[in-house]
Amino acid sequence: MRTTFDFSPLFRSSIGFDRMLSALEAARRVESIDNWPPYDIAKLGEDDYRITMAVAGFGESDLTITQEQNMLLVSGQKAGEDAGEYLHRGIAGRAFQRRFELADHVKVGGASLTNGLLTIDLKREIPEEMKPRRIEIAAGEALPKVTTRQIEAEKQAA
Image (cartoon, rainbow, N blue to C red; front, side):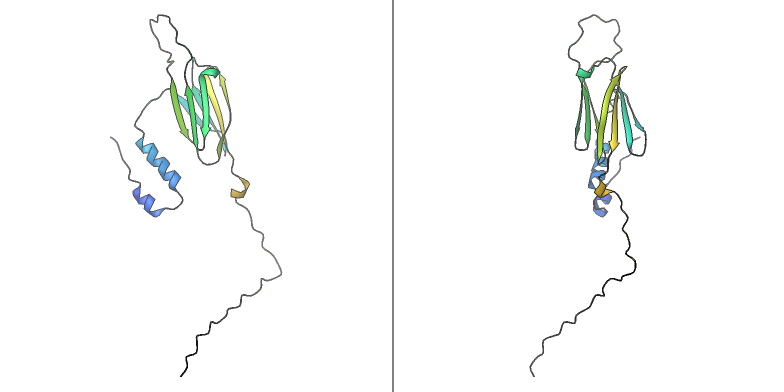
């Protein structure tokens, strides 16, 4: 059973949430259920995340990681094919492309490949000007009073 959501009422009544609503729309449109390569996403801390992908058979030169704005693209393609005759081939070596939508200010911290697991560390770095700041309240001296001026109407000649 498939459930569809209509986000149009949210578009009509919200301001500044365009990217979030567009991401929800894009997630809804995804039809492909390609589970390869398998991956995990873990939250390590308040602003730290890790993606771990099982890419057995791929080397560092076969993998490409690209971040463009809020999209992380991980792709893999083996350089050459084995010409051997297989009785059973269970280790997938086909090319892949996996996309991850990143929130604002999430940057790739680093990546490593160990024992067939590709690990990508992500960190959210909020700029100082966007962090909440405390406004000091001045004590003692009051602000000058605002005076209001009356606009006089033109006098009409009798």
